Image (cartoon, rainbow, N blue to C red; front, side, top):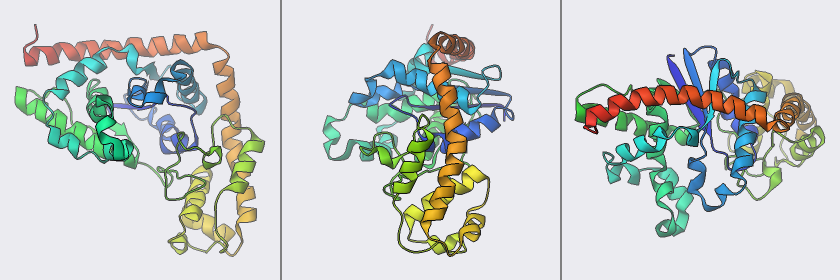
Length: 331
């Protein structure tokens, strides 16, 4: 891997789904890539009206989570998207070559706008174009994404190809998606058919990285399951989404296969399984939360780290934008 880039929106607390689906993998990848950049995508956070509430505090929280999970600021650049103005400049350039038909195919806009599509903001509609700019600005070759963002990455690939063909230069590499592991899509603890989300009304739907051991145990005890015992194979959990979700989470935290987890607890009800899962989760989450609190108590240090990351990101962005402007004729 030459260069990887990914990011998280600072729109509230950070939860287990963010960690298992993304950040956990980045920690490993930063040692495999020639260069890695991990962005806090605060400009994307503005696409929903309530997302700008506590935006500054949420930005610090995401930075603290990156560091506490093991992102090394000496190996990787951690920065806020808004600290690199070229993101929005390149997004505008891309918006002028992206057909509306491509954006109309984006399913996430339809899901988030719901029945009030005409009232949705332009930013939400154009979100995938800004995401393409985030990726292509740094000539990222590999992008860790969740399943729900895979369509947006496909659009970024289309935009890169369209730009290269239109201006007759291979200025943008075609980035490759990277989707990992059994728990890349962690589901709600209250509804196994819905993704774990910080926007869910119920705090019992998710495990926050700042949760205490007691809170983790309580949420796992209350997690929705069913009356059937655990089978001896993962395929036996078909049509049992809540059970599938908990087994997947356990498997990922324990570095086991879902089948191995089922074999360990085969024939048991969910009570002993949940007890073990809560213990395993607390071993991972609670120390991370303690580190996050330490970082959040020293925002000057977080500012220093993000400033350093933004400096490197701006170096790369500035050099690339010189070539982009030249290609399209901006003097």
